[in-house]
Image 1 (cartoon, rainbow, N blue to C red):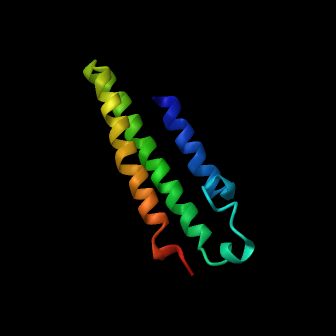
Image 2: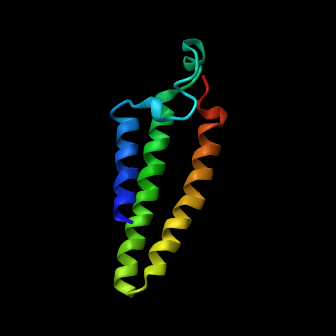
Length: 100
């Protein structure tokens, strides 16, 4: 669980601060003219925030499962983070908010 959270933190940081925009699905296949129509810095910030939030939920779930001595708690937090994070990321990143 912690490894997955660390991977999410690394991906969020790489996309935002390392400018690894090619990790954003579809962005690397756009033409230069299409890329100019999007606020990629805003989208990268969104990805970072969502990835960090999902990682935080996973870490909280991990420590809660240790404290409660129940491994199912970590799994529940993992699935909740995925069920909330992925749809939110898809909906927000495809909204008109990030189009110029």
